[in-house]
Length: 106
Image (cartoon, rainbow, N blue to C red; front, side, top):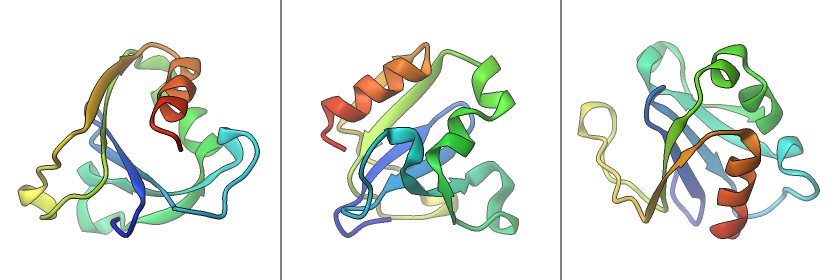
């Protein structure tokens, strides 16, 4: 999840969402992102999904607010995962997440 990607950690869910450096245009919900559900461990490897699949997930929608940390790179995986967050925000709606993405120039 390095190489210039922009990464977000949804702390309550322990989800990681990484935006590739290029290839996405248009509305955020149509972007293809790399998704990792760390709570499921290695049985749920990283996968490419449309961001819409994440933000329209029933669990995601009913569990606001979310604490979201933005980081560029992280060393360590699994238990060693300790990103250096550049910014952390509490978001109360998907619209606030879009504003966060704008603020960090995704």
